[in-house]
Image 1 (cartoon, helix red, strand yellow):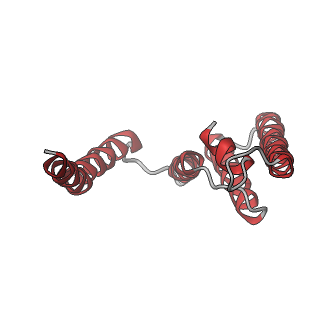
Image 2 (spheres, one colour):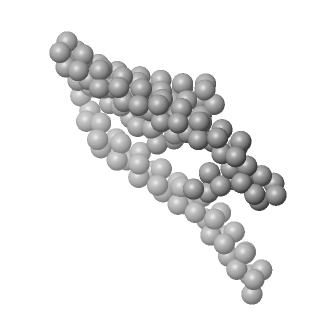
Image 3 (cartoon, one colour):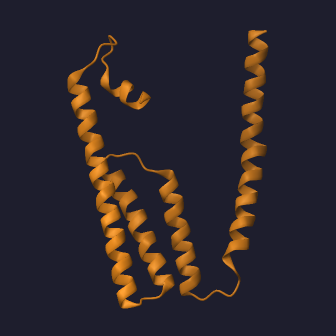
Length: 141
């Protein structure tokens, strides 16, 4: 909602109908692009299933669709969706892991990496944020 308000009002704070029209057309194109991505996903899953390409190749195909759609979003000037980039990379890793028949289970490695990422984010980024927050409180007291 705030995104829409930021893009649909003029500098004087009044509604700018030209900006509103542009905003709605932009979001309509983004929704259509998302629908195309889902359509390609369903087609790929059906084809991969019928062709019996294997789980690894199936996951790699899904990763290619997800990451390809993010690349298209970027090329067309839409915002990248970080969540879907991470999901696409996850599918690519899982697919390669399966395709290459790596004997070490992937789940424990993912859990270790997630734990390390959480520790780093809390330790490094959390401390900076809490210091900033403390500094802000001191200013107001």
